[in-house]
Length: 215
Image (cartoon, rainbow, N blue to C red; front, side):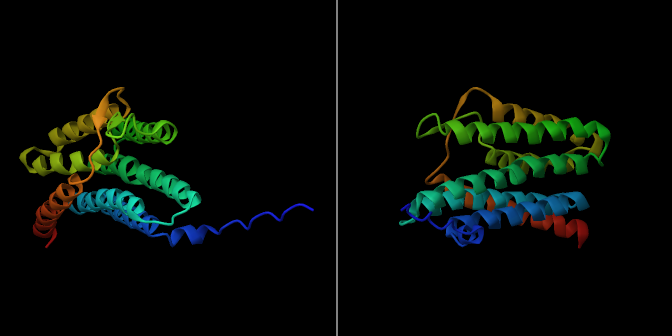
């Protein structure tokens, strides 16, 4: 007599896993960023993607510190994290660029390249993983949001047309770095605290910019 097939876990049973809750919080931040980018509230959009980066880092830290997680939970968490990364660091910057470019057709190729590069990079990582314990092949996609947040601080020094070109060029360069066949370091450990400080400081700055522009 054949042994009965083990009962398959429900999808929502994985959603109760703490690292996955953290991942979904990052997705919420990314969605808020996309929402504000479409409305043209770019400082608020930047705040959203910065916190998406924080939650993206935090879910891995929580997962590594938890005990008793099954292989299924680890596998599901990895897939969920990858899919959310496409939204946070591929779709978000693409929509940000399109919105800043007033949804001009000229910005569509750049937006496509950003999303495509992110999807290719994440698919490659899902197969091959890290080069070693301390380095990636190509730039990790969470850096897309970190770099964008820093460069956008200088937006006020340029007129809209000039900064549109700067932004377009920046995001294409970032997409190229995501796919570049070069080893880049993996930031972990104490760098998470640096990220928290960076995010808090820029949240205050962009919050003030958004308030003064819309208050």
